[in-house]
Structure formats: structure tokens, C-alpha cells
Image (tube, rainbow, N blue to C red):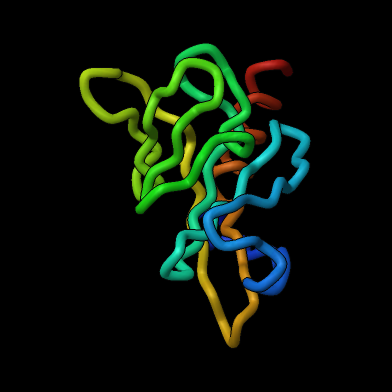
Length: 121
């Protein structure tokens, strides 16, 4: 397998993520927050606000955004980008839903881990 192929991890059933809520997936490179919108869309971001590192999983989900609990930054769940006038980006992960099951693509995390390992060597 090459690094360009997605690595899909089965995470949970969609119903295990509360509507307008989150579920946190522990990961060696940092926790990943899975967000479920009112319309049952699921998004995944690194659970770290780009501003001061607050846990986005503890924020309020509204529309397709989450508001950081520390300083009320709004983060777009589609892109991970902070909404203007704020600037910054939370790492985003691809998500797919298949027959009500949530899968997370770790290809970006795998690449980041490989890059960190190479830099440390």
C-alpha cells in the first residue's frame, strides 16, 4: 500500500454521535473530534482550536460550525478554517458514512506521523 491510498478506520455507528454533539477518538498524534450536525452530516477535526488549543469537542455545534468553548472562535466543520475575522485552521480528516457506519480516513494523520518519524530520525 502506498501513502496516497486512504486508510479508512471504522469508528462507530452514526447514532453513537449525538446530534449537535461530538465523540472523541483518541489518537497518538492528538485526539480527533467527530461532529454530527442536526442534518446528520459527520465531520472530523483535530480536537484543538487553532487559537489557544481549546478542545473543540467541548464546543457548541451549530449549522456546520463549532464554537470553541474558550474564546468563542467559530470553526467551519467542512474546512477546519476559523471564520472571519479570526484566522487559523484545525486539521480536518475525511469521513464517509456507509450503511449508517462512520469511517475516518487517517491518510493525512499517517503522512504526518511518517513525516514526524523521518524528522526525528
